[in-house]
Image (cartoon, rainbow, N blue to C red; front, side, top):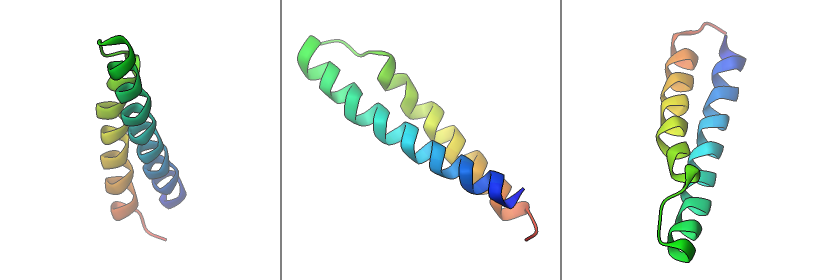
Length: 59
């Protein structure tokens, strides 16, 4: 479970960063938020889940 937690943390970080970068670009270009902005809370949830799984697992 420790490796699953680490992978989930990295996936959450990646989703949050991509959502922030591409969401901000779409917001500036088109003036309305896109699906990219919705990736930020989902990425944060994955980051939190991965942190919890990593902390509760035994190596």
